[in-house]
Length: 270
Image (cartoon, rainbow, N blue to C red; front, top):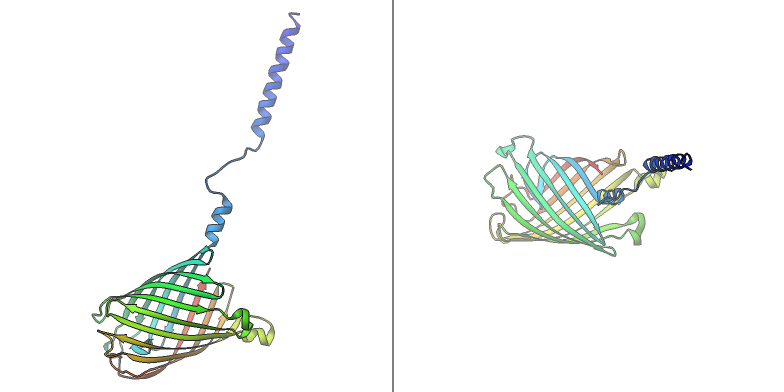
């Protein structure tokens, strides 16, 4: 009896040791506050793009404010789901020469919220216009825009109409603008490869400022035609011509009521 007990004890201890070692090699479940899937979903809702534009003239709401300019920009967006999204960004405008003493420099910050229901999108935004040239006063402006997506109804021939209202707090100014744009998938029709479009757009509006920019208001019309090419899934370039006219030559660079100019753009987005 005395000789058997130590053997039984040894067997029990050995079994316990083997059981403990086996448990140590098992993969244990790790719980975390935020899962990788949740992080991936949040990141996937973000969007971003950077652009660089060149315009042989800088026209804003039908009036020339500068000659040739370059305009870099950064745009960030987030999709909250259920039709809601938000955006913010920066847009710059810088003269490439000192045309008629106009060394133009503008930096704008903007942000907004959009809501999409069915094919309608409502865009409510704010823009801070800041100027480093000409002693211009910085401006604060609100925007409310309604657009409609006709792609479900018209397919490749879908136009994109919109109507927008702006209120400038700095100059107690109001602007009403409406427009249409259309991107014809020309390479899709010709070679069944959808990487280039012919882009057409037209917009018209009426601006009425109580101080600083116009006296009694003015009407304007803008139109553009160009070609956009998708180099990769994330990188595109475009080039085209633009036209604008207005019925008030006051406060423009050289008094012209109509302008025709050229522009080019490149953009990378994720």
